[in-house]
Image 1 (cartoon, helix red, strand yellow):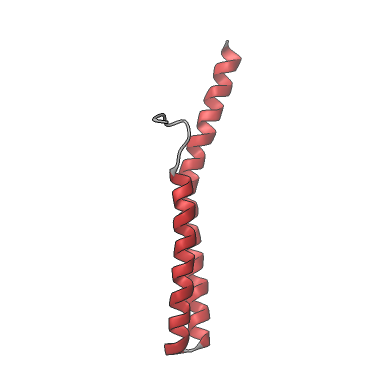
Image 2 (cartoon, one colour):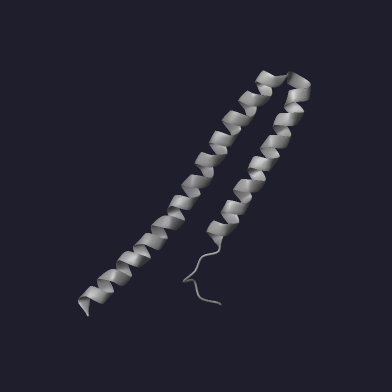
Length: 80
């Protein structure tokens, strides 16, 4: 339970991404009523794209950690 073999942060980041997209949808609806359909669609598209890129960059660092751990375990098994 207190070890760091399993990371919980990737799950938290996935949940934060879902919350972010939901908030972006709300912002797009509000923009639709104030600025029109084109602005709302453009806002949702651009912001969702940047949010996805941001969260993917964070996830890459955690995936690299996982893959490095697997490589180290594999090399350890080969050396014995």
